[in-house]
Length: 370
Image 1 (cartoon, rainbow, N blue to C red):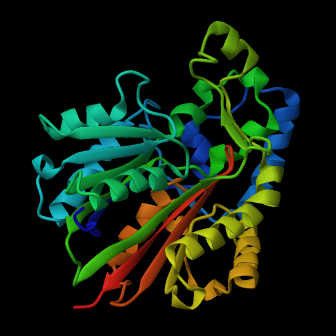
Image 2: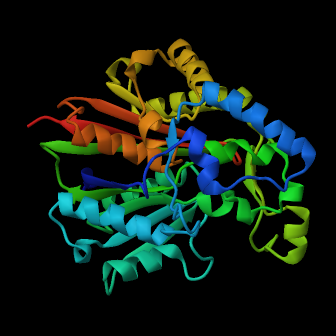
């Protein structure tokens, strides 16, 4: 059996639609829930005041035309832009790609799959495309497929892309406002639309450049309640009955997330470091993107206590780029590369917790020496 390839991250690309929307203007774009029950309408101002005080994301990006309120970009649109930027930076053409792996929470269509539409828009007549359905950890699951495939020699040049456009189901027109509940509210004020891409290539031995040391994923929520949900699909199609009941709404159990996410994430991050053979003292930067200061502070404290990684090692750009789910990990790596914040010899660890059914994922990079 031939030796396994090493996997190089050769470039990144990132796309944020439109202009940054400050917290105070979010409802100007997504619309007011002014037909909700009196209880909800009374609750909204209190929640806004509370979340603004703890929110780390100071702005959002939406693929919505601010004048017409219509969708301005799809997952396909944003993904293609992110991939093209990454290809340009790597001096590659779309036809150089053997594989496109897309991770997305909600695709553009159930059929055909969005990854095939991305291939079409890139003008690639023949390649392999795959699509992974998940929330924040869709990026690490997609990266796992690409990493393992390159290691065994199945593919040589791969685009791993993550895209999300929650504005499509967080705008006021999507809701049956009479059925809006508290768990449907807070997500509207901090989730952003975005797409990010990582171009990976096979190498016999990486002497200089960014090497992917490994990828990690786990699922630990079998005995836990769902923390985030959007219940439409084959088991709950968006019918008149579903809209009437509000069962198509996007929601999150904020109390459960604040209670469990730091503990679950810290434990899984520890498993990841052990599996990849990385010691805490060797971690140069830890990328973890969380939407609130409260959640971040609690997690930092646990990570330092349990794993020995100090808070000053953390890196996040959520304040300026918004909270974009799995795309936020790519966004941070992209920012670090473009601003020369990765130095030779550095080991960068990125990690995400997905609260839907409590899955975790991460990856580690090393800037190899000449």
